[in-house]
Amino acid sequence: MNHNLAGKVYPTFQYEVGREKIFEYARATLSKNPFSTDPEFAAQSHYGNVVAPPTFAAVYCHQALRNVFDDKELAMKIPRIVHGEQTFEFGEVVMSGDTISTTVTITDIIEKENRKGLINQFLIMTTESVNQDGELVCKGLWALVERGNE
Amino acid sequence: MSDQIKIDKYLSYYYAGASGDFNLIHIDNEFARKAGLKGIILQGLCTLGITANRLIGDEDPARLKSITVRFAFPVLPEDELLLETDEKDGEVKFTVRKESGEEVITKGRSVYR
Image 1 (cartoon, each protein chain N blue to C red):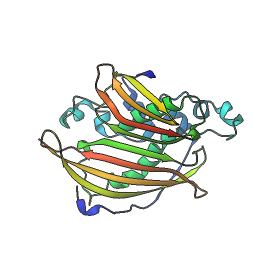
Image 2: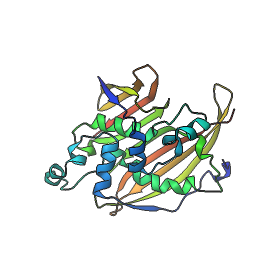
Image 3: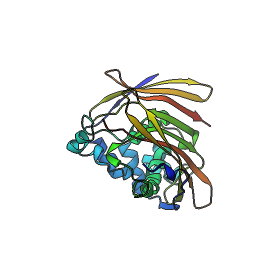
Image 4: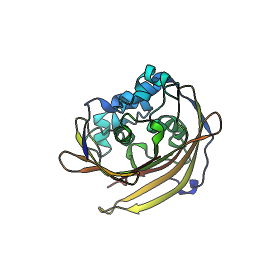
């Protein structure tokens, strides 16, 4: 990876949250939470609407992160990438009909030698996502690892 | 407290569709092996999503203030996982391990409002 790209900020990406996408995500992450899976319960709740599971952040951020994965200048070796660490801090809940704007920054790119003596590279990114009212919904700290070749 | 999680054989495909993460190491065994893995692995964020959903249960999703994890070992199709939690003062420390013993999520920590 091109270490000179530490500090790069990518263009903000807008994601419109659809109700069926929330249901699809909830099913794929085995949620039984009624706020995210039961439209009648959600409609009668104080939200009056279907609420995304908090980690739905992975969905609206993924679309924003594609800009990083596709960045020829960064030259990631995608098949050698695995996810190392993840932190999400949540603000306002995300609901069906929201528009979420996410900005990705490459915070750092670090090399570390692993126990087998291979050089792994760590791509550290932060995401900041706000809703249509400018309220923070999620801050993400992402550590992806490009595994070194034997 | 501990809670069992069974990973369906095709979950990585469902999660790829739901999340947009179609990295071939999650859906193509041959490709995954060429990349130095034993076979396809589940998306780490899928394991995180399942874990977060278990921690929230039926409660208002707004209660979850933050969650942090380290992905220590790949989760494979048909793995059986155990989520082990230790709750103290509005904070839960957790680990996810395979029934065979390997820890797949370590340094798990979630905070509530």
